[in-house]
Amino acid sequence: GQNIDQPTEMTATEGAIVQINCTYQTSGFNGLFWYQQHAGEAPTFLSYNVLDGLEEKGRFSSFLSRSKGYSYLLLKELQMKDSASYLCAVTDSNYQLIWGAGTKLIIKP
Amino acid sequence: ETGVTQTPRHLVMGMTNKKSLKCEQHLGHNAMYWYKQSAKKPLELMFVYSLEERVENNSVPSRFSPECPNSSHLFLHLHTLQPEDSALYLCASSPSGTSGSDEQFFGPGTRLTVL
Image (cartoon, rainbow over all chains, first blue to last red; front, side):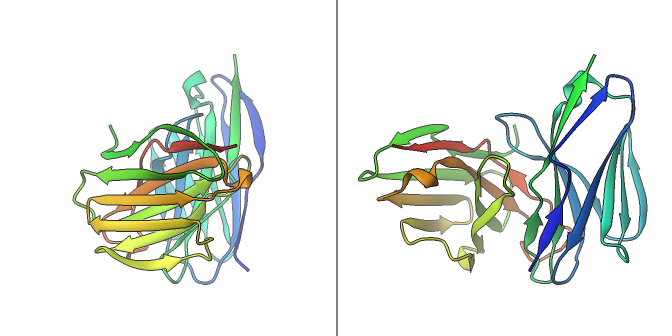
């Protein structure tokens, strides 16, 4: 079967750094996405990785290792507005997105 | 503004009612999706349309019936639902639906409660 695993909840302090991990087992791989979803709102796109390595975009970075079936999202200089759920999703061989259950990130002052 | 709108935002219905959810995208995309989102569960893909043709139906119960009259509009018709169908129903669109790099753009969702 296809499976995406990520921690259910994480807590971090404002101004700090947090890494949210995602491991996946899918039938084929055509890329990995990270989305952010604030409570009561729609998911919004953060990043896309298809090749191994680190993609940096401002305070957010995303890393991919295809051989390990592993990705992480790194958030730096955390702000209170970063409190949200972070969804990991993988595009499989049929170009369908397989989603993780999301990681709820709580930022404390 | 994400370019994808959904109505209604909230819906309460009895198990014998018939209702419809509406989604409209203003992005010129060719693919549209219905997802079900339940608390602490992964997004569940229900239906995919590409160029108005249904390309995916993930064993969704027949009490959910999609309709895609054109590439900008998507409906989800609901009838004789069960309380376990209560969830957030999200609509999304993407440029093609056949590319691994296609970013999906989501609407705000309809919060459905079945009594």
